[in-house]
Length: 149
Picture 1: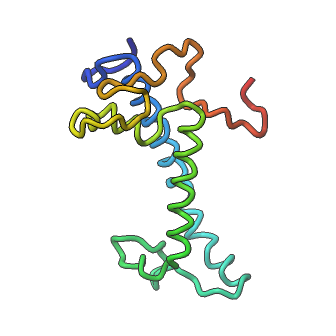
Picture 2: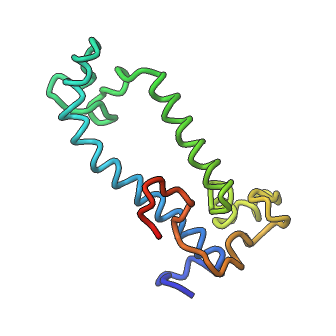
Picture 3: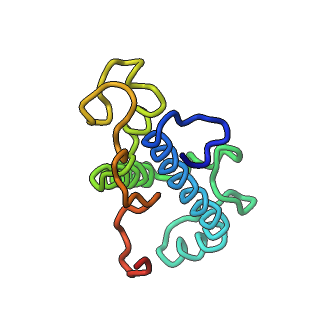
């Protein structure tokens, strides 16, 4: 079946959807862990070269909820951030992989609402990725450098 020590997945498709979500969140966490210190290091230099004010706080920290600096971030940035998230989910769904709606279906939202959220033609246990013998977790078919052969 797969590694699921707490038994959250009651089927192979559900396990695969959870695996996709885990990989996506892990990749985001790795980008954030790299991006946060790099932003503190290079943002003032980039802002100065563009003639823009630095967004770092007076103590030299990135803007965050904890230091109250998010109000200085432009709404255009947040709109772009939201657009990138939506585009990623749409690409994931178009590639036939688990996106937001299949994940919500796997968590039981279809049963709660009585609506087919993931588009598999039925309400309940998701069928996405059920019969795919060549399934590879996290593979969205995006490899511009040709590193995966």
